[in-house]
Amino acid sequence: MVDTTGYDRMRRGEVYPNPDFHLIEMQAEARKKLDRLNAVPNSDMFNRTVMLRDQLGSFGGGMVMSPVTWEYGRHIHIGEGVFINFECVFLDGADVRIGNGSVIAPRVQFLTAGHPIDPEERALRDEAGRIVGGNAINRPITIGENVWIGANVLIMGGVSIGDGSTIGAGSVVTRDVPGGVVAAGNPCRVIRTIASKDNVKRSRAA
Figure 1 (cartoon, rainbow, N blue to C red):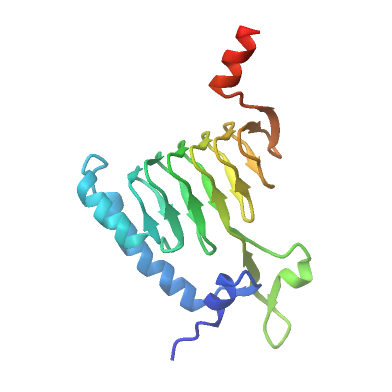
Figure 2: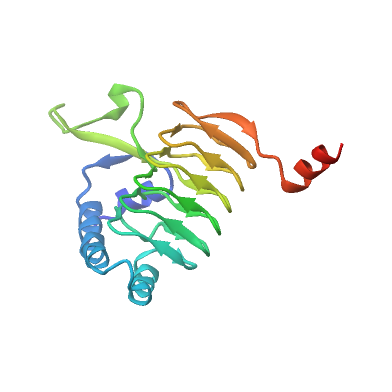
């Protein structure tokens, strides 16, 4: 009988032991399908869409450029009209949700996986007290609608980015970003709000 305890704990956002051989087997099976997807030309939208809907938790439509990397695929939820450029990485032990119309630049990383800060809590030990691995924990990532994420951004677990925001290239997003702002840096911070076209027109008229 397969021990699914680690998977169940991971999905509940609890600390779980790593390595976990059931999780490794799941990742290996997902990788087989992912390799087939990455071998299909990006121009073959029909077959890629069929494969994405089979491999992901949900796929509303749009384009995911290869090469792309994920651990499970099944925990990724992509809305309608989303564009994800090449070499993006999804550590999707927890859910990654990307809202309608969002644009993701190359080499963005969605990193739901992490480890306890306390080194003793982080260490996975056997009965003799030897370190044989590390405990892990996953937190979900939520990207709102019509968000633009620049190249090489790192988005950490537990983060939400609100509708309409822009994240500058190279940022490390460690905490929530509200909607309607430009944010950038390491750690990522709000730089300014984004004025709507109506607000810009009113200010010019005044």
